[in-house]
Length: 99
Image 1 (cartoon, rainbow, N blue to C red):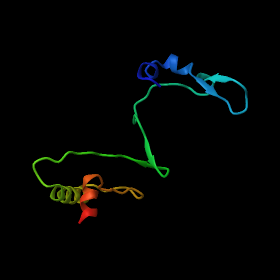
Image 2: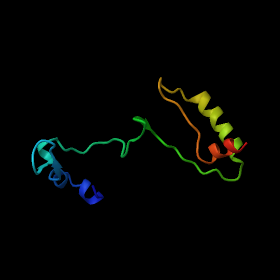
Image 3: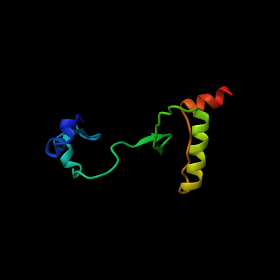
C-alpha cells in the first residue's frame, strides 16, 4: 500500500482482495482483523529463510582489517541461536574472492 493508505486502517480494511473460489473481490476486513502494532517493517527471505541485512561504510582504514576486527568482536560477544549464522558480503566478499 502507499504510505498514506497503509497508515489509515479504515481505508486499508476496505482494500479489495480476490477470492480463488468466487467471482469479484471481497473487502480485506471480511477476511482479517486489521490492526496496528509494533514489529519489523519488512521481512526479507532467501530460499524461504528470514534474512536481516546490516550495512556499514568503512572509512579511513582498510576493509580487510575492519572486517577481521568485527568478526573477532562478534565472535566473542554474540551468541547466535541454533539455525542462525552470519555472512560477511559486499565489498568484503569481492576482496576475498579476488585474493
